[in-house]
Each structure stands twice: as structure tokens, then as C-alpha cells.
Length: 584
Image 1 (cartoon, rainbow, N blue to C red):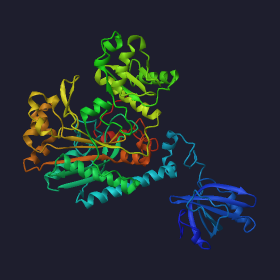
Image 2: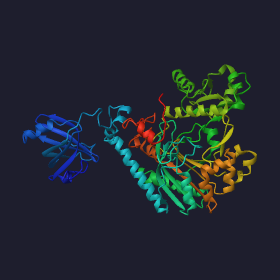
Image 3: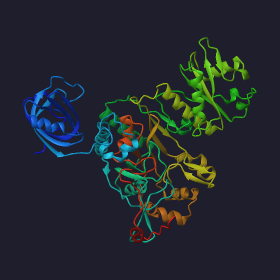
């Protein structure tokens, strides 16, 4: 046999046993007449010992081993004299009697260790080597464990796991689709699903009652640290439910994951809920990070009309209070000013005010305001001696977004965004629709099947932009990890929604006729939610990017640099698919 034990299995209780191990050479060390080899597999590392005095040819063979050689050894388990408390096998070593090289290896382009010397691009090109590193592998082990717990939790609550098709019809209302040409249907295309939305609704019409799927989804959109062209959702749908039913059940799932995977217990109180309106008003974001305070304080009425032109011309003036940051130097304040003036943020400048130990307010706009007026501002912020107030102004929505970025930056600088601490939040009452000035039409904020709040349905005629959605997002530490809604199950209301979105009857029937026709046969009230598995795993693992919890991710340009994909097709393939690609 290739092995009797793994490289992470042997313990001091095995002393005296004969064992056979197989794995990769992590490193070799020659000390006098002894050669030590660290042998690694998925389960751990075991130290091998080759003694020149006992077997010189074997020791000479060991000295020729290179990093990442695949070998098999047989020997006797012995207690180590210099134990390694950092290894699970650190109390033992294997005195080798037999060595077989199963496969030699080229020297890898970077070290296969937790603190590797390989950059991101190099590690992505040789991802199969990067996956040998414990730091990466443990993220995939965590992912496996979380998927297992999701299946356990939902199965115990009578959810059925149902697979839905990967080749579907295109729905251009959302993000851009990835499309797949059909050879047997010339000039026609499948799309890869952005989500199984309509299909899971059909399962509710079918009477399945509770469905889930851990499913691949695809969106052809610009990438960020928390986005990939293909990603994995925990996709769920339930019949005969209202918003509170969905929120309660899936809050329970999140609590279960934290408890089972991280050993984290939350209080028995329900996770807080915040309306979308309040999230934007107080945090400038629909996914606020509640690990720290610094809620926005609006001071427009207080500070306008005193002769300071920047304020007098602004629609909106607001700021944040950074506790204990009055000691910031001019250099640090200049850094913050440059931060908010970056093109990605776009502020025109930053105004600051310190509260001195005696309560006096010292500000960058002292000459425009009396101390009495600055004290009134201090009272609005609730600032105390030693606090720093940071203020931005301008057009309301734009300034709120800028202030949001400043708040997060200050949270980082003050060490308030602790990755080992978790704050969960439900954001509710989103707008149902958003107006596009460019296209002069409404778009669905979530998707066309989201139900309006029942009390807002009359507004669909009079004021569609004021209608709230029966929708909800779960936010953890400032990351949207899941979102869903109660769906429209009434055909007439769905027709109304399509009309507001600018669909003709013909277009609605062409794209979604299968769903509308199904509703005519008795659709139950239903709703659901989808969690981004990649995002949840990255949060649990304390990662800054979802790439490190995906086995084979794409880079920021959407390319797989290991497979060198995407690539052009051969002319014969294009011809077979009836695709005419003109040369550039």
C-alpha cells in the first residue's frame, strides 16, 4: 500500500510502530550525519529522519530530494527530542528504513508555505501549487464544512435540494448575461443563469413548498474583490410565507453557521433591522458596517447662512465624529483630505474640527464661525474633549457616498473593523423601482418579480418611485451576504409591474410567458432569499477577497490565467456554430 497513515495522523501513542507515509517534500535539512525531511500532505507534516551511520546509501538518496518531490517512506515512529509545539505531529518523528521517489518535481516558482514569496498573478497561474499551501486549503475546507452545515440545517426544516438548468433563456433586465450559441439552433443562444429566480418560483407553483440549491451563477460584469464572473449562491424559496417568516428562518441559518463552524453565539435578541432610508441617511450605504459608530450627523440648517461660501452653496452638510482622534496631526489630516479628493471618491475637500481638552473647538473654518456657533456644532455631534469632527458637503446623495468612504477609512485607521467580531443586520424597505435619466424609464431595484409592500400598491399608479419593495438584505460587517424578497404571485400585479418597467405585452410574454402562464394554474404566495456562499466563507475566514475561498478563481480582468481562458475558437468551430467573426 502507498501509506498506512497520513502525515498529520501519528502521535506519541504510536511510538515503536512501523508506518508508511506518502506525500510531498516540504523542505530538507542536513545536520552532520543526519538528514531531516518535512513530509507534507493535506492532513499535516511529519518529520522524517535519515541517519547516515545506520544507512549511508539511504541518507545519500535523501540528500538528493528536492522540494515538492513526491515520495513514499517506511520507518519506525520515535519520540522527538526537540519537540515542535506548532505541529500536531510535533512530538514524534519517523526513522526511515525505506525511501521511494514516486515522482521527482521541478523547483516550484514560489515557496509552498503559508508566508509564500509568490505574488497574486504568479500564484493564480500555478493555482494547483498554491492549493497545496495550508493557508489556502483551510479556506476550502471551511467552505466544505459550511456547505455541509447549510444542507443539514435546511434539510432538517424539510427543504428539498433541486437542481435547475444551467442553459436557460436570456433575461437582459439584470446584469449582462454570458451567452452560449446553440449549434442545433442556428443564430440562437442560451444564457448562463444569473440566478435560478424564475425556475425556483416555478417550483413553488409545482407545490414543492421549500426548495434550496447550492448553485453556480454567472454575471458578465466588472469585477471587484467580492465579485467573480461565476459565483456560488445558497438559493432558497418558500411557499405560504410573509417577510417575517423568511427573515426568521434564515436568520436561524446564519446563527447555526456561526455556532457550528466558528463557535460564535449571538444573544437571543433578533438581529437588528434598519430601513433602507435610514441606512442611507445615517451611513450613506445600504450595507452599513455596524462594528463601530460614527453615524452621520447632518448640520445643514445649523451651518448654512454664516458667510462660508462652501457651506452656503451646499445642498447637504454632514460629518462624522471620530472619538479620541483630536490628536491627529496636520500630516494625518492632509492624508485624509487627499483620500476623499481621490477621483474614485470625488470630494472637493475636507473640513475638520477638534474638541480641545478644555472643550474649546478648534476648526479649519474658525474665521467663518464664532466659538458659540462651533459649540452648537459640537453639541449636534455629541462630541467630547479629544474627539475629531470630519465634515463634507455638496449634493446630498453624492456627499453621503463620500462620507461613507471616509467613515470606513476612519474605521480602518482607528482599528475598529475587527475581523474576529461580527455584527449582523437586516436592511428592509428598499425602493421597488429606480428611475434612469439616461433611458427615461424605471428599472427594478432587485428584479421584476419583487412584490411591492401591500400598503404601497396604490402608489404604483400615482407615484411609482415612492413604492417600497417587500425585500430584505442581510448585511454582516458591512458586506451584503444575502438578499431576497416576497414575490409577486398575482398575474394582474405582475402585468402591472411589467408595464411600469416599459415592457410591451409581446415582450413580457416572449421573455417571461412561461412564468405568467404557470401563475394561471394557481401560484401560492411565496418568497425567498439567496446567500452568496463565497462572501460568507470569506467573512468567516477573515479574507479581504473572495478569490482565496474559490478553488480556481478568475483575475480582475475575468481571465483564468492558469487555463488561459477565454481564448479564440478555431474557424471551423465558429462556422459550425454559425458565428461570423470578422477580423479586426
